[in-house]
Length: 84
Image (cartoon, rainbow, N blue to C red):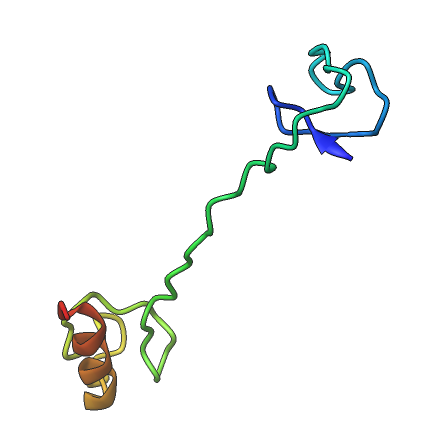
């Protein structure tokens, strides 16, 4: 099996046209790598241990409940944001 050179859809052997875009397929479809999806990076916010409110970067106290931010979290955040 190959892939359509126009849209990347997988094409069955012997097909004359792409089932997705209608592009004519040559006698032997060119083997084209399917398009790769970009990885999605999800950053989880740092939250207050007391009330669960997301904390602003560099905060020392929670703006909602006033609880001090644990120093380990501040240190971890600093390690993440510092350039290597």
